[in-house]
Image (cartoon, helix red, strand yellow):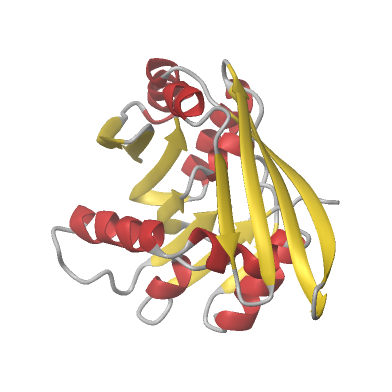
Length: 230
């Protein structure tokens, strides 16, 4: 099954909102705890739109994702944001942004670091002067820590099992979702999600190469947050 074809429907319930809350606080602190208002904002790899929708009331907001299924979910719950199916490596939009962010290890889906650099280059082209790029990624150490782990989630009409297998800079999530159709009868959906990571110093150097600057603003539990300014 194509990635997120069914998983998109239960993604928010499985993953929860703790991370989205955390990311919103990071953005808030970047602006010295002042309200984020009257900005033009783009989220790369927006998924179901759970983060960008929190900014859509007082800003002009956009979200892109390569998964049409994720975009469909985002569009249903957020009518203010303009959602578009696009690849973050080569997106072209007729706007310049004050903030571009790529959250929840979305960039880890890109398989080589030269293509990560394309994301940075493309983001810079779409930023206003003094605009910022912020993104996070799972580290190689994180992959090692979650190797051979399994997450079980029971929902109202589904049961999900997500198992991880990692090797060096690659991690595979095998997702099995049992959707309830009738009493004691379930339909099985299987999806495979693959992520890649690279040494932290190498990633930071790629950002510096493009922007001339890069700053690690937070590092926690195998996840690194990087900020660059045009």
